Length: 215
Image (cartoon, rainbow, N blue to C red; front, side):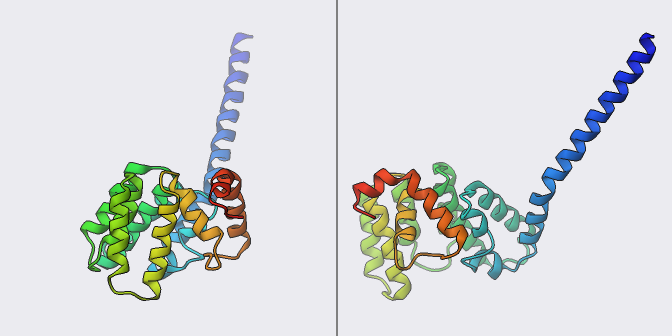
């Protein structure tokens, strides 16, 4: 009798374990498919497309997921990525870590993008580090440097980002960035995912928006 009960218990346990394994595999499949799809994208699709690549995770506020995708992309394509492409991914890693509130990780990647930088003027990236380190004089100095160096359409957008960081100095980076992007005629996106993102940001930082008079 005891042997029969033990046999039945073992069968039931095996069934439960098998079900758990199957469920786990099923739950993991979408993420694996998504990662594989992203890893097959060209650098232009993955990093330069403002409505695709790792940004599809950012607009879901899955900042750490976006960081993981970039780290994996760097690993998978390291042999073929050009130096400036690695710089770009390093900077964007700093950006999503800053959005996630991961200050040390953000500073590390921003600094790495500067250390490996091939584009001459690091003041733009240094301004993000200054914001994260609560160093307002450094942020103001970086803005002055950028404002007096190689003016142009892209430079104007960089200065707007610096102004947002100055306006939200001392507040979370996510608040400064989203105030700029979600309440601006030059907002980054207009799709349903972007509106959903901005709605969530507004709910989280409504007090800060009210303080700065943003409607």
